[in-house]
Image 1 (tube, rainbow, N blue to C red):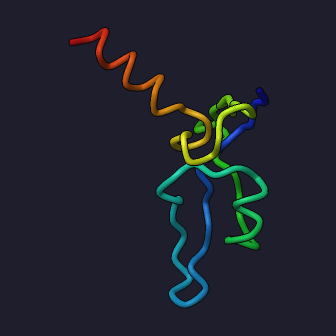
Image 2 (cartoon, rainbow, N blue to C red; image 1 turned 180 degrees about the vertical axis):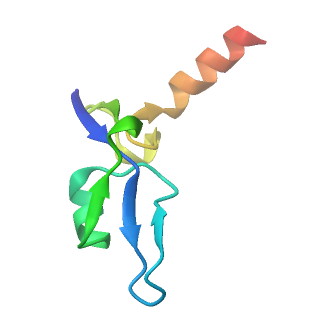
Length: 77
């Protein structure tokens, strides 16, 4: 298992010049690929756990296992 920090980023649209927040939280590496000029919004910091022993297709949004979601959901109902 490893932990990653994700943030929403404040970015500037190159065409309109308007600034906006990214819709989803991204790691620093993902944000660097998509948005060369970016600023992380520190108040949106979230630490997520990625399970290395689970195949990536079984993980949903940075390490939340689908099977774990199903178990947790079944406990609520």
